[in-house]
Length: 120
Length: 334
Image (cartoon, rainbow over all chains, first blue to last red; front, side, top):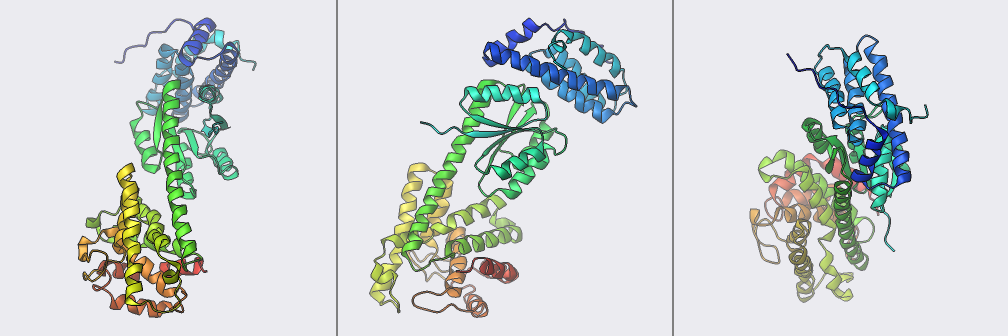
């Protein structure tokens, strides 16, 4: 039986800003633009996942959106959360039936402070 | 002032594009963005000067694999393609490289690595520009000689046709598609030594005397030596092949050619190929000293020269691909 993945600590705007500054040497203005852009992408992938996990479990689509979500989280320096998205991507690609809805909900909760930045 | 390089960035995730754009702008690159392969291809059609593409693979509308294939099919000038992929997805990476991608950047991207890989691509494109400069020298040589019009283009296409066909028919020759392309690209340099031949001989409207012919023969060694010198300095394999074509394209399969009287397989492969391409074009073109031969007459002579002047394998390929040769001749009429 696969081990249940640990839930990382919630993502804070301060932590992401700090990662953007240190990893990419961005200016304050660029950091705010990228934070907003990342929030929008998170929202897009999470909403897409919400749609497919609640709608007949289209595994290839779940895998695709999981892959996209993983990319955004990795760019934000959130490796722990990216690992959960990776689990969605790979498990769905392998046709594994699991409670994707629960994982997506956990990620949404974990990144809620970032999602607040999104102007959607 | 330096020239700002333009890069096409293709990714369906706007956040990823924003981040890469910011990283590339730090390196003074100008970025054009596209959200999928189809959009990217439209940009490249509109802006042919964009020579460097960074693309994600998994995208809607047109996948990155299809974009790579489409760019390679339509390349008039080489475009350097870098794919964005996660380091664990080796299968996709191998497929992208086999379709024609040049390099990859693992995700998440490190800005310094991104810029270094882009700079590597720019260096390679710069080398291509140097090759184009060398080809311009060949054009200059052509302008001086009587072989005006599309002589170099026809020889290039005949060489490519021969190279590809020989590669398929004779695996032991080890002519890959890439090598056939290299043979074609160096073929315009075969007569570069003619720049050193006096006008009175180069443009003589009649038959050359034996003394004049001796001078004319020098063009092979002059061109060959020139290219060999550049090869020695640069170690570019492209120039080594160019040197072999220029130096030995007048050798004969039976050993009666010049400058060294090499025989059979001792004659470099590219020279044996260019010899036929050049000979066919010379026969079927009008020159100051002769009218153009018909294709049939040229074909008869080529068949007669099988195993004498020409490598039999080249002649067999010419006969098998005769229609392609005629189509090239038709396409590039003077």
